[in-house]
Image (cartoon, rainbow over all chains, first blue to last red; front, side):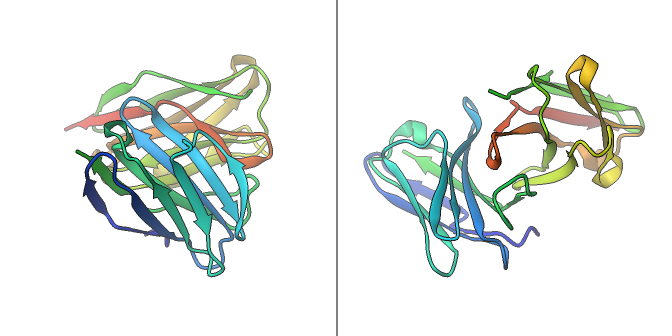
Amino acid sequence: DSGVTQTPKHLITATGQRVTLRCSPRSGDLSVYWYQQSLDQGLQFLIQYYNGEERAKGNILERFSAQQFPDLHSELNLSSLELGDSALYFCASSVVGDYNEQFFGPGTRLTVL
Amino acid sequence: AQSVTQLGSHVSVSEGALVLLRCNYSSSVPPYLFWYVQYPNQGLQLLLKYTSAATLVKGINGFEAEFKKSETSFHLTKPSAHMSDAAEYFCAVPLGTNAGKSTFGDGTTLTVKP
């Protein structure tokens, strides 16, 4: 158990819908990262937050957005969903952002029908 | 930009045999390199981390990796495979000064035969 929790574990929705994925980092970790893992794209970094502020952006679509709240939990919002958004979405956390070990949550499996 | 390449998307070994998973990094020497393991239906877990302090890095579960600058490689090895080692393994290198922007290799699925 990494100490990072993600909800829900599974999500099935339809094209065009909007969903919110939630992540609670390990106690004391200020950085939260979001990743997307799919068969065709592999593991892709989406975005990082550090203590409530956006710190780094990767291959995140404009239809996707994230935020980190004062209690340090984070939410990833996916809107206007397409079939291709079906993937595993991982959250990870670390103490700070630079070169520290990242602890990954169990992931949310999103299926868009 | 830094990148890593994992050679072989699938590796199959017999229980007790040597495990060798290959990772090559791009030509510029990275300050850090990582190996992560992903067991079925789980998130990634750090196996080991190269931080320039030592070229031979020991990780969890009996794995180790050797940084070879001359070969631009950071291959992962384990002397004797166990059934519980069956998983997907990812090599990763951080981009710039932020490990969150790590670029991950495509992964190597390790199968261990009884």
